Structure formats: C-alpha cells, structure tokens
Length: 440
Image (tube, rainbow, N blue to C red; front, side, top):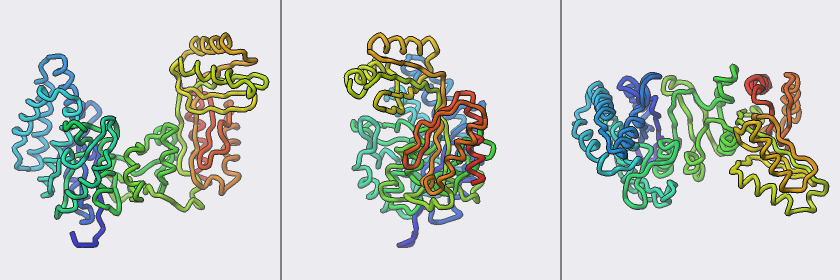
C-alpha cells in the first residue's frame, strides 16, 4: 500500500461467509477498493435455517469430549463443510491436515475456548489463500485478561505485527491468547471486537462491519413496518439504544475505536452499494432529531410509599435490600421524598409479585406497596430531541390515542426518554412512535 493512503479494516460476519459463493462475493467487495487492507473473518455461518453453524458443531464436539463420548459424527459434518468450501474456492491448502490436528487437539485441550475458535481459524486460512493475502493468527497479536477483556498490551503487539505486512491481511475473529497462554474467546460479539482492535492497532481510517442488513435500523424492522436504516448515529446513541434492548453493537466492540475516533460503517454484504450506517463521535442532529426506538421486556413496576420516607433512610435501605435478596435486577429507580419507584427486569408471575409485595409490607413499615402488571419499557433515543420541543409531546400524544395505559418513566435524560406500556402494547406503540419519527 502506498504511504499515506487510507486504510480500511473490514469485518465480515458468519452469514457473509457461509459458503464459497458468499466468500467469492466478499472477495469482490474487498478487491473493489484497495483501501481494504485488513479483513477480519468469522466462522462459516448457516447456509439455511435448518443448517448448524460450524462453531456450534465444534462446541458440540467439546461437550462430547467432556462426557467422554465420541465426537466423530459432528466432526465429520465439520470436515465435509470445510472441505466443500475449500474445494469450491480452489485453494491448495491441505485442509485435512489442519482438520486432523484440530480433531486431535479437541480431546487434548479440552476447553470450549479452543473448540469455539477453530471455525474462525479455518475460515481465515482458506480465505487468506483465496485472496492471496497474509494470514495472521489472532492468538499471535491479541491478549485477553482473565475475565475476557482486551489487555492494553494488545495494541502495541498488534501494531508491530500488522504494520510491517505489505498487501492485504486476513485475521480470524473471536479469539486471542489468555493470560495463561491458551486460546481464549471473547464472551460475545467476538469478531466485531477483533475488528475494532485491528482497526485501532493499524490506525485505520474506517472500520467496516459487513453483515446481512443494510445498516442500523431506527427500530426492529420485524416489528415496525416503516423502520429503515439511519444514515448516521453516534457512539453515545448506540450505547443508549443497547441499554433498552436494541440489537446493536456491543459496547466492547465500540470501545477500542471510540477511544481514538475511528468511525464504523455498518454495511450489507448482499447489497454493497447501500450506504449503510456510519457510527461516529458526533453528528448533525438538527435534521434527524431521533435515531432509534427500542423496547425491553418484561418488567414489573414496584411502587412503595411512606409519609416522609426521606426521613427514614433505614426503610429505603431495607427495601433495596429485599430486592437484592430476591436477586432481582432494578434497571430504573426513581426516588422521591415519599416514594420509591423501581422497574424490575423480571418474568415473575402474579403469585411471585404478590409474594414480593407481602415480604416488603411485612418487613418494612410502609403506607403503600404495589406491583404492576407485566410491562415493556420503550426508549426513544436521539441527541437532537431537545432541538424540537414538541416532538416528544407529539409522540406521547400519539401513544395515548392508542388507548393503552402510558407512564412516562423519564422525561429529563439528555438523549433518551423512557415510557412504560403493557406488554401487549409493544408492537402498536413501537409502530406509532416510528411513524411519528419518520414523518418528523
């Protein structure tokens, strides 16, 4: 690559690499722009709904090893799938030798991390030869801590290796080397995290994340008919959407590039001409005030009242203590002088809700203790929401016209508003909010 030329890191997910035909499509995308220097690959995904991911088959092998049983049957499927891809791509690597080595090591290593990482490893080997690129093993450059976080020394190690390589590089995602020297995988969103690490280490100008959708949608398109992809969204907005159930980037996959300001472009492998969504540090929020709406369920709203509750700190402490004892997660809490309102993420039934109310009233001297029916929390996110004062008012009015009970949970957060509605109101309310946003 010419000195001073832009560098892009491109990560492709499992559905983009499910078979030789998809991999050929990926090659066309990569070679269409020579700025795409480093490619991060996932393991082969499902070819169809009834198919099984290679990673899942490998983890099945690991479970059988733990049980002292033969794993020949699932491994035979893996072998056939990998050899079919290699043959169709026309790569000259002796995949049977690699597969034989993995087969033997599954019973020697006896770790889910080793088993779960081999799909990415095998796919990267084949793709690197198919591209005529340099293969770099992720275990060589990525260091993980005991709890699965990225060790800061990774960036220095990876930079030294990656910046010395001429031409394109293919790097398997999802894993690195743990503190004890063995293969260790990321807990979730593994290949996305690898791509972000590589982008920061090599000093990329853009980190492309190629999936099977054309960007990040304003809402779940399976629920909201008019939901389409947003052109631009900030790291901060992504984080807020994730807290209310949106299937967007995991925070660990954003952190490495966010720190140095590298934008992420979410693109569709099956529609490469679509612009996708850019995730950036900032955006012009004057035009698009809101960027997303999502819901999280089920919740129960717990309301506890006691006259002059603020004068009885032990009572409030006891209430919080009971919630902890019951191992309930409180995602939102609103404290007033005489009232505590908690939104508990729980699927408890009515009997369980009654038991909790009973326990609180028998333990703490309160005036009122009440538990709601199951709810969904719906969050509306956008850094420009305060630039259009009537927008949130119109959304609340639109929801109220549907005839469902509505509670405004939070009306003062900087870039997010929260509403609570009954579970069965989720789809109609989500669609109504999207309609309002789209017509804004």
